[in-house]
Image (cartoon, rainbow, N blue to C red; front, side):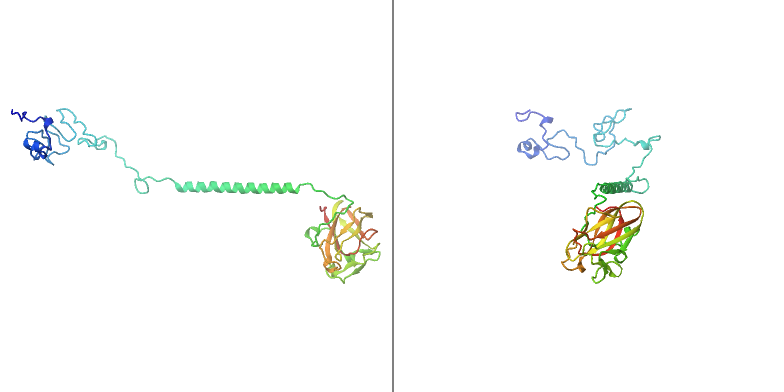
Length: 324
């Protein structure tokens, strides 16, 4: 050995890139031509393509197939490095008596493929549930309205006594032609029994009676009209409707049922609001609640002391029950 040379290079002194430095070149480092670094460096480099994957090195030779060691005689080769397939591996289905090969089912149609989820059935079921809920809500709402209506119909209402006349509502549109009143009697003015100076007339237009005939001359004490009505189906409560006309001012009269005067006068007010002095625009209607007997009854309207009787009388008719 020389002072500048400590002998042959040891593996830890090997520098595969020594040829790049001055001191390495001084020591004889050359670019790799089959190995790295200095002369006599450890060299396990193989030419590309020289080492074949899956081949087994000769017995006792250093290194076997990549990732494996050479197997001793009678031993099973060990599995290769992680991630590398074993060259000696055989799939079970390739071995006689091994597991049968199976095909992986894919999505969609075709041979060997499974069917996807039944989305059509789920959609139909959802629609059915929504429809059932909507129908249930509709039925509940209808039942609630019917119940509320029933409660409203059974509400208590105040009605006048049998011997009193009810104040009519301010309506000028009532007539004797209502369908619900057809089964009960009605009468025109010219069929009434007149007394005390009351007389038939037709010079004021607008009367509903046949031929436009009405009862006039009623504006003096003692004047009266009487209706002997028959055909009452049963004892009970009825409503007497009276069609009349006033000259733009309120009037009233006395109502008697079967000879008994009602304690409350028959209200003949100017509900229509017609101008004063205009009989033609003053036609309207009123009503009184009365108690009648089954069969025949006498209904009388008269001008008595204390009444204001400037009024023309047109028609009369009856309906079942009392109006409130």
